[in-house]
Amino acid sequence: MVDDHSRIGLVGPNRSGKSTLLRVPAGADAQARLEAAADAVVLDRTLLDRPLSALSGGQAARAGLAVLLTARFDVLLLDEPTNHLDDERLAILVTLLSDREGGS
Image (tube, rainbow, N blue to C red):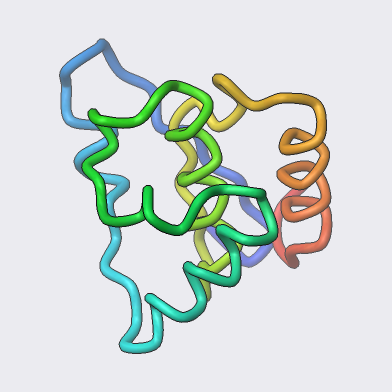
């Protein structure tokens, strides 16, 4: 049973659709929140309009972290969240996850 304190992992082989499943639409004010989050993780705002495939691994990881910072969901689905994060951005991710209510 999944409850308020549950943490769930999504596991599967490569190219099975895990990342596609994790794409969640954002709210109407998403752009403003995303720009503020990009500033917080030191990501150039001009990169926000580019496809992730056009970004370096580190830029894509910071873009993903910026999206996490804007999330207003009770559930976070993370697909390899620490890949390509430097120590500073990893600390932001740890703080973000630690500060959220829910499972541990």
